[in-house]
Length: 492
Image 1 (cartoon, rainbow, N blue to C red):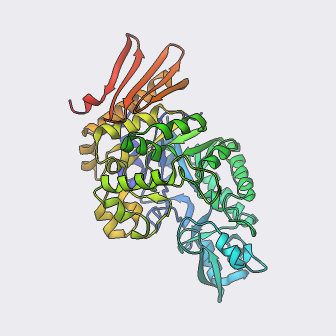
Image 2 (image 1 turned 90 degrees about the horizontal axis):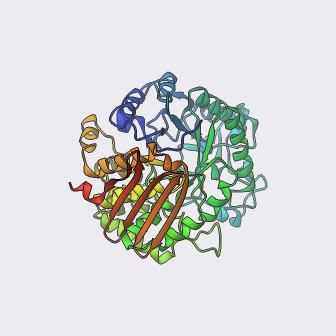
Image 3 (image 1 turned 180 degrees about the vertical axis):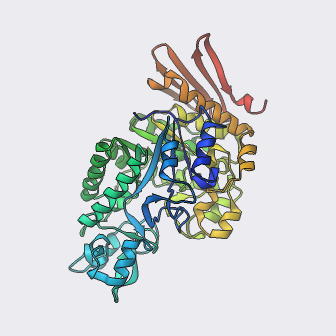
């Protein structure tokens, strides 16, 4: 049975060294705060060109991190979420290496997408210009397959080769991944980059009807094995609402930029607009291993003529405020300034995006915790981390500013910081108080707001003012209602 309390999002190695270390941290210093954990790719290798999202072997735990027994041990008493990387595999995988050597004679050749596989009659200029891609340029890489030069479909990087879900070879592969994860104790599957799987001639090759069919097939496989599915798609907010009707869980990617807008512009109106229409079967986040999504609140070419949750000028102002709040470090990590870029994201820790303001960071987390859904908390945000410019300098990968490698001493020190202690107090309330199993009501007026969760006689209330970052959390208990946390506690 899936819990609905908070989950930690983390790399095993970057927070705790390995899987046993992660379990020890969750059972130790973080005890009572999290009902689950999303372990970012721990497959072989976990440290590839895209931080594990380019697995050579998606069915094996990298032995440097542990074993499947360690994953099963981690799952004792908590939910474990893991990624099913649906769209692509490593160009260095055994299957694709065989295709490189033997070309069409390889039994695995149908599994991998080339330009000709989608456009057998050739592609026109209009066909190519229509293809949706989150990065500059066309999604093709010239490779030699069996002695023949081919245009291989590579949506993200040349090291990640897209697979063709129209073929039995692709489904044999994906089924083996789902089997490995669910037999290893994983009960929640996150479908990574699934929106790009439904490539069809005559479309923009993103979120097509074929994508829906593939997603439904994986959802059926997961449910048959006792697992739930979370779909990861960045796009226009109306798409998220539509996807939510078809799957177990969808990300609320609109919440982070709307919370940032509220706390940096003193404007709650766009957040109120989203609260009126957002799906409740959501996983909520503030920051993740990727950047802070902007496309999720703006207008989109995917929905021509439909407005976003934030007008373009407000988005521009928000991005500029993030850059200013971070002392310009996010500007160095975002867009064309850094490789492995996504045009729709700002690369920055949430703490730096809020100018390292403890009150605003804790208030942002409390807003997330009170909104309906399963709250997921990224390890760098939890530990009030700042942009890792040294790591960015070493890798040149923009998103690495928010992917710090913590030592045990750094974790221990961070856990004493006021912004971290405040978040943990909110997380432990969210994880244990029965009010969060019930209804959500809210009132926003000017810069002030009230969020209330109730279930029977149980009640938890958050009152706040985004103008100055002040807040108070009250909750019922055996001795009546009490104050759980206020902004003043962060400086006490």
